[in-house]
Image (cartoon, helix red, strand yellow):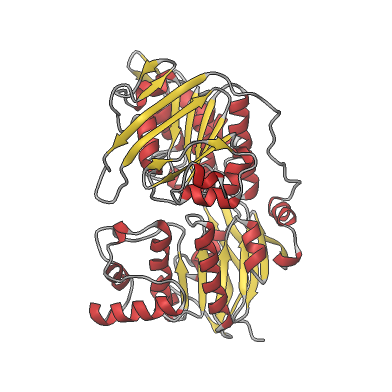
Length: 504
């Protein structure tokens, strides 16, 4: 069969780094093809060339046997290429139909577009109400908006970048049914994900990149997830482990916290209580948008809470801000890497200074110790294997996974007494995810108390001592993580607590 897309010898270099070197691969009509590689392997650069966001320095692309040289995304879309990005590009205050219209070259009237949205979304099992505000949608529904926007263009090739990172297991299955239907109709799918069991379930073929080069191909369903991960990193993959232990005394207590939503599209917290013990990892699961960001803000000090609701070491810290809490050893790493956990246009050294000034002693008598900050940033880079030319580069220049390693490493290396992290391994490859999880386990083993908020249930079951679920701003009763079933977790995430869960 003539390939739909054929890449031959693609090369792209940036100052100080070769992002892609002599990359070749072919995708047939109706094929679901995985693109695998650790963070910084060159996956993003490759799909940007296909989508017209960057031009290759060398090599050729062909679409249906004809030269394919898109100068911009508009040209790629006109040739039949659609792309669903990892980070959504939607406006909360606009409706589904209005957001979709913004991404179309010649959008029809909203009434006609709304009818088309209903038709296409129902056909592919992704029902959407075109008049709903995007700000009112769950993360899974927002992804549907992005997918339907692509499907309305009738793509022959659909590129999907980490499409399941914000979905529940049930939503993942719905998405996979849609993708299989598209493939059966002849649409080729280029699928990027770090969730290797999903790759094994969905994909027909896989190309593995390492340091910008193709290092192998495989048929995922005939290859174990571990073997694929080791092909990606080029070494034996370590499995996070911790010796048996008994958590110590309570170091952080949250009692009956209720707080209004920070904005029209946020989630209010409702009577949230928890006790965190020294040496334990407390896992909090839930579908995106159920209060995770708001809970982290309350724990980190970004949103001070009423007196008596939050105590650390017996002291009331509710009214304290982030700097005062950091001084006490209560640290946090939020989900959003660029703009929240890190300032995009600041260097890694400057970002190290932003949160490390107090605990690393980087400010003395009103002066900032920039030499010390560079040393601290370099130490984080070295310990967490952050792929970057050095601490002087801007945060936005790092791949998402490498910036995540820097953000988590920056907090872990400040020796916190309490660390709260939201989505610690989001968008991170298997090797880096294992290293981050091990770092969190080691931190707890050393006596710190760790709260891990994550939508990756496998991750929580792997590292958490106790588990609770957030649903519409309410936190379920905590239960020992060991022995919890998927059904029990699903009920907890859906808002069922207590006896309802116990009788599953």
